[in-house]
Figure 1 (cartoon, helix red, strand yellow):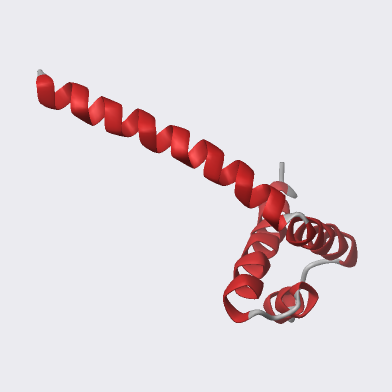
Figure 2 (cartoon, helix red, strand yellow):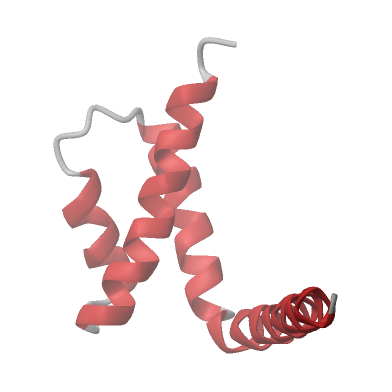
Length: 88
């Protein structure tokens, strides 16, 4: 599908804006606009990606908890796998 790379690109803008806002403490919309400026993204896709970024930014504490929960489980599984391999 020809639109798919463009859709992925705007999703990447949303993720990059979240990261930029986090490390610079810029407001999420300003971070997003600084990244997408001049990228040639149509208004509909831009609005969608900004909405995603804003929504994730508003729920970042909740999302951080979920990410930490699953990251800890993954790390525990990896440690157990390493320990198992070292016992062999």
